[in-house]
Length: 65
Image 1 (cartoon, rainbow, N blue to C red):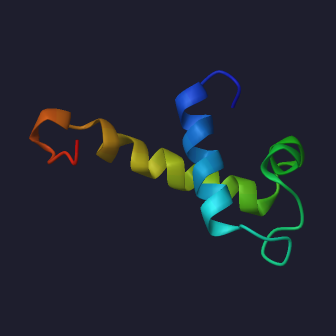
Image 2: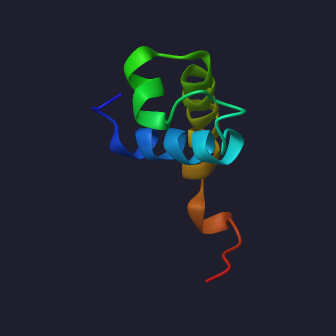
């Protein structure tokens, strides 16, 4: 996923939030990406599913800042 920096960053954030310890995921994000673990694939899937919601009509979304 080296070609989409934003999607990779989102997948990393999801991976780190969902699998914060070695008890939940045996390796860190970079190794999971390298080996294509199920944890990595699920984080990527979640990022891909979230992307349209984050990009759609940004002006209509409320902002905290």
